[in-house]
Each structure stands twice: as structure tokens, then as C-alpha cells.
Image (tube, rainbow, N blue to C red; front, side):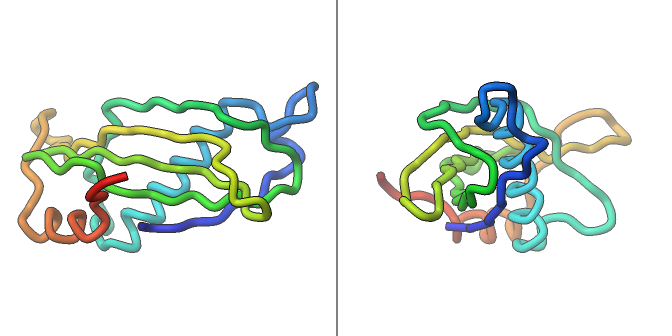
Length: 132
């Protein structure tokens, strides 16, 4: 499981004092980028698009809390893969949100999906969930 930490900034909170729900998508994006970089899936050219994303909000998060985002692969297809991202409050270990996304390798020149290489599939499989 890939892990990335973020600390909530004051500007990410709303009038109710908790993190605005839009920011959870930013946190997941930041973690996905680190995941892609750490696996060596991206280089100078960015070759992935986000095809679908969903987030279940489970617990409120506040300024200055630290979240650990754990990213796992749940499915590997021909040109796409699915991720699950669990956001944990570091101190309590409680899950605050759970995100799901579908990532597609994309050929921007021809405007269509392109197959994942076997090397990419192997790298992704090392982070694949087997069972919950």
C-alpha cells in the first residue's frame, strides 16, 4: 500500500470549521501523483487521465490535522486501473474518507486510450489489494 501524508491548512476549511469536501479530491490527487511518481509510471510526459472519481465522507476533518492517504490498486485492465484511497486521521487512525477512481492511460496525440505495458501492470500489481 502506498502512503502519503498531508497536514490540513487553514485555507482548506470552511465557515463550519471543517475541511470543505472539495479538498478531499485535492488530497487524493496529490497522493495519486506521488503514487505515479514513486512507481515510475510517469516521466516528462503525463500519460494518464482521470476517468471517474467518487468519495465517501466518513468523518469530519479540521485545520492542522494530519491525514495519511493509503492508495491501493483494486483492478488492472488493458488500458486502465482502479484505485482505492483511504484517508486516515493520523493520531486516531480512524478512516475519515474513502475514495475510488479509474485511471486511463491516454494517447493525447490520437485522442484515445492506449494499453498499459506489462512493466506498468507489474508495478501496479505490487500495490494490488487481494482482499479486505
